[in-house]
Length: 251
Image (cartoon, rainbow, N blue to C red; front, top):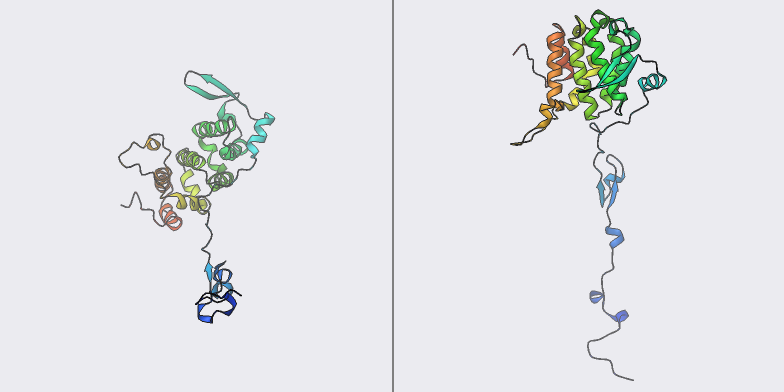
């Protein structure tokens, strides 16, 4: 037999202090667990952070009643082209329209983001608010749900359009601003979320300000319009829903 070299011995016969340590890869793996559970208190456990709240996440749109009525041909409107672009050609005088029927439907179209539905809905609202006069105030309660639905989409473009509509609505007729005060709880929560979303372009040119598409600025303008035309109870109700708002009249 060939003599074994000195200092060498089979792996099985090696002393315990020279044996290779057992691999504990499986044991050392850390498991992920939710917080406030029994697993979270165990060793080698990593606690997951809370999920994103999704406050700024856009919501999916749903079919609107405005689109249904438009495709059915129930609106007395048509598309007219001129040198300035597209506009609505009304087949009847706007002052003779049934505002209780048509104005909530047009406000329902604020959720639309496809042409021509979004164009007809938004332009139709501004036309009706401009010529509505005393017919607007009695319809205010019917407009709250469409306004709330449009804001709850959390779509930046839809929010900007809705804010401009709200600013026009407040000044469209007497007492409209005061009539909106009881509905601040439905309208203002979304404005409180997006209030500080301002575009900081540094030394660059912020074209969104020229186009009035900066959400933070539009929200500030809308809240100030609510306070100016909402009467003496407007500020305290705005402050309750938007705590960071500062009065434009008291200061």
